[in-house]
Amino acid sequence: MGQDQVVPVEGEIRLGQFLKLASLADSGAQARELIADGAVSVDGEVETRRGRQLAAGARVEVDLPTGPVAVVVG
Image (cartoon, rainbow, N blue to C red; front, side, top):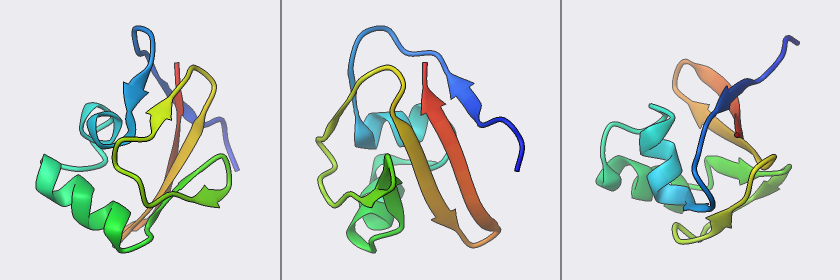
């Protein structure tokens, strides 16, 4: 597996916002669905809180229909 993409962020960001910023969700509604469906994990653990604060270095993985995608908060 190659290097994860790093998405630059100023300070902390909430998970739902980060999914949109990283183009892993097209809208807030889609981000909410992905999180509710258990398709999002942060640092290897499934996360169900859309408002979870992410700090630099957090690894977010999303199980998309096209396959899993991982990005790192920059």
